[in-house]
Image 1 (cartoon, rainbow, N blue to C red):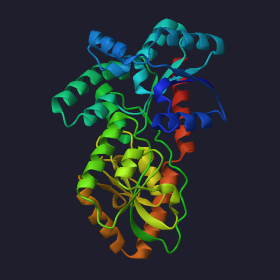
Image 2 (image 1 turned 60 degrees about the vertical axis):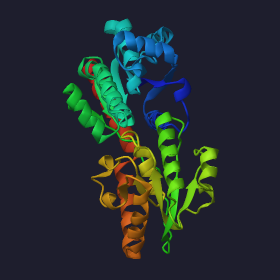
Image 3 (image 1 turned 90 degrees about the vertical axis):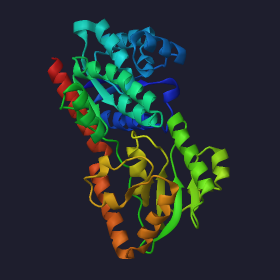
Image 4 (image 1 turned 90 degrees about the horizontal axis):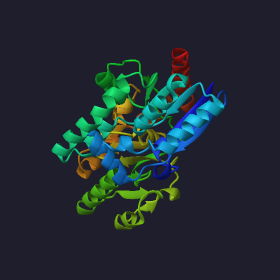
Length: 367
C-alpha cells in the first residue's frame, strides 16, 4: 500500500513524546512492507485557536492544525503520490481531515484516524479538581468528537487503549474501532539474587503542563512527608530544580537488572500512560501510580499485583513493604512471567500489523 501519514508538527514533535514514539515505531515497521510518506502539520498560534474555538463553540485543540497551507500540501501530495490511504495520526487533526476531504471530494483516498487519547475524557480528567471546567471542556470536546467519529469522515478508527475503544463506541455508535496499543520495550534480565529495594524511579518527560503539574504535586507531597529509607532516582526528563529539591540520584547509575524497584507515575489524569507503565515493568519495577492505569493491563496475568493505584505518597511505603515480605522465589518467578506476557501482548510488530489491517480495510471500503 501507499500511505500518507500525517502527524502533529512543531512543538509536539519532541522525540520522547508518546505520540512521536508511536508514529516513529509504527511507521518504521510499516515501511518494511509498504510505502509510507510522512507529513508534519504545523500548529496554529494559541490565540487563533481560541478565537476559532469560540466562533465554533468547541474545544480549541481541534483548530490547531487545519492551516490552509497544510491542506494544500496534503492535497498536492495526494495528487502527486496517489496514496491509497491518508492516516491522520492524532485526535487534534480532525478539522484538518475535514478540510482535506472537502478539497479532494470524490478523489479522496481512504481516511484513517488514530486517536492517541480521547480529548473529552483526557481533559476532563486533567481538570477534575475544577468540576465546572471539567464538565464544560468535556461537553465542548464531545461536541466535536461525536460528528467526527460518527460520520463518514473516517473509514477506519484506530485507538490505543481499551478505555478509548469503549468511549468511541459510546460517542459514535461505532464498535469496529481497532485496538493497536503502543509496544513495550524489550525486557531487561533479572539477576537471580536480585532483592526488592526501596528505590523509587521517575522516568519520562514532564514538559506538558498536566505532567509538570503532577510532578510538582508529588514533589511537594514527598518533601512534606518523606518516605523513610527510600531513595529517589530520576532521569534526564526531570527538571533539574525538582531533582535537586528531592535529592535525586541519576537512574543511569543503577544496574536495573540487579534489583526489583518501584516506578512512580505522578500524573493525576487518566490518559496516555501505557508506554511508561510498560517501560517500568520491563525494567524490573513495580508500578505505583497516581492515575488509574490498570485497564490496558488487566487481562495480563500477575499485572494486578505489580500495578498499584495510590492516592498519596503515604500509600507507597506499605506497597514496598508488602512486596519485600513476599517469598523471593515467588516474586522473581512472577515478574519474569509478567514480562514475558507483556512482551507477547504488547509487541510493536503486533500493533503495526493491526494498524496495517485497519488501513487495508479502509482502502477496500473506499474503492
